[in-house]
Length: 400
Image (cartoon, rainbow, N blue to C red; front, side, top):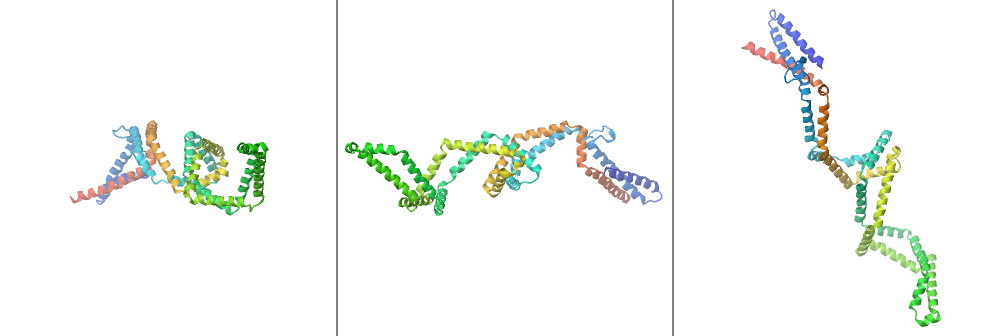
């Protein structure tokens, strides 16, 4: 394009010389001479203007030329400030991020993992870096708090009621009843002497003197053991039927009785308040974190195997759960806005210092290459427009 613009300028100069030599014999060539003369002026003026942006024309130190090399530090500072004001202001970043669906993109990436090995390796390094770089105490507290909050908000009594009702309908409660009866029998055996001592303490002196208290205690223990044995052996035992009725009533009350549901919720909260449960949640988080970190360090496991299945399920959950998407997008928006507020000035300084450290010829060369063809179109247009202006002026001169 530079050669084309220069070639057009040379052509106008040649046309001017030819027209000037022949104008005496051919008066109409005065129009051609006027066009070519003005075109040369326009072409030379725009060549000077374009050249003056990047260097001294013909090497002459003319004032206000080589504008970009002479003012590169000011240009760098202005560019950095432009980036700061238009891209790194927290309000601008927040407005740009308002409609950004970061969660949707993450969900799609996780639910549709790429099979390419480089992607797996990149994901492996990414996940490992994230897990290693996060504040584990703070993140662990967030995870534990989230688990405890979800458990606290979860109404457990309807779930227990429906589960028990389904178990009774499919006779899956029978082993539970058998287990309770067998446990009662073992408990009775283990505490037989305690029962004898209780009967002996409550018997009168005559019974203790005659030894009837021991006989009564043995009879009670034998009767209870026999009853429990019969309950295990006979599925239609009346007491078993009473137990099944009690379980069915409990299943109904857990779903529909407000008092029973309140008791279940209170029991759940008392369990969650137990320090042992907090330690158990801590152990779950720590084991999960170690497992995820170990799997993330393995490129073949980063998006494959159990971790890959878990990540795919997480991606699908993110895509389906609007509340989760909104939460992740809100977190990402706040994080990016916070980064802009905290590091915007540092980025501005990095831009201005980098440009200030460039060589002047490097700056002008890079900008000239970036603008490229349009600079030479300025010269082409200046040459042609100058010629047209010359024709107009020549026409006015002829009229006058």
